[in-house]
Amino acid sequence: MEFDATFWVVMASFFLFMGVMRQVYFEPIRAIQALRSHKQTEAQQLASHYAQSAQALELSYQQSLQAARQQSQQMIAERRRQAVAQSAERLQTARNDSTQKLVAYSARLQQHSNALYDELVPERSAWADQLVQRLTANAKTPSLV
Image 1 (cartoon, rainbow, N blue to C red):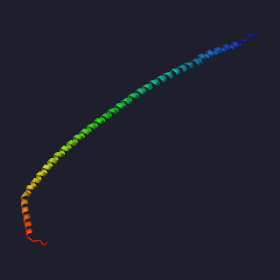
Image 2 (image 1 turned 120 degrees about the vertical axis):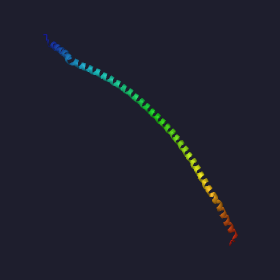
Image 3 (image 1 turned 60 degrees about the vertical axis):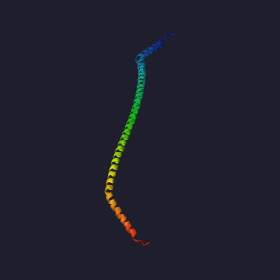
C-alpha cells in the first residue's frame, strides 16, 4: 500500500482555507453582529430613558394643567364673589337713591298739594255759599212729583 498524501493535503488545505476564511470573512461578520447587538442594546436603553423622560414630562404637564385649572377656578370664583358684592353695593346705592328721590318727590307733592289747598280755601267758602243758596232755592220751589 502506498501512502497517498492527497487526503492529508486536502485536509491541510481545508484547515488553512478555514483559518483564512475565519480571519477574512467570519471575524468581521461576528464583529458586525456584536456591534449591531451593542447598538441595539444602547438604542433600547436610550428608548427606555426617553420613555421615562416622556412619562415624567407628561406627569409634570398634567400637574401643571391641574394647577392651572384650579387657579382659574379660584380666579373665577373670586371674580364671581366680587361681582356679586359689587352688584349688591350698586343695588343698595340705587335703592338709597330711589328712596331719597321718592322722599323728595313726596315732599314736593305734599307742598304742592298744600299750596293748592291754600289757594282753594277762599274759593271753597264761596262755593259752599253758592251750593247752599241753590239748595235752598230748590227747596222753596214745589216739586211736581
